[in-house]
Image (cartoon, rainbow, N blue to C red):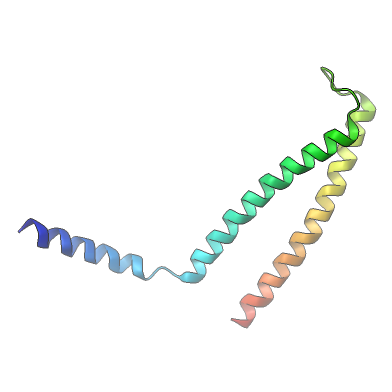
Length: 98
């Protein structure tokens, strides 16, 4: 009684799940990796720029420290954008060839 009911429910639910598009799953994984990379990049960028720009940590940043950090982050983001543009165009080429 109970078991067959559960089995058929489970089976019909599984049928919907089995049609998951592997391409879609890959996309979602890539997005998650990209988010993780962005968080790590931000962390690294902050560490690097703060170490480079701030001589003596105090309560506030003076003008030159703020400028230094802004410049540092700009440069970092530029190189990050260059890399991610290259990566995205490669992804699009691969998708076109699939």
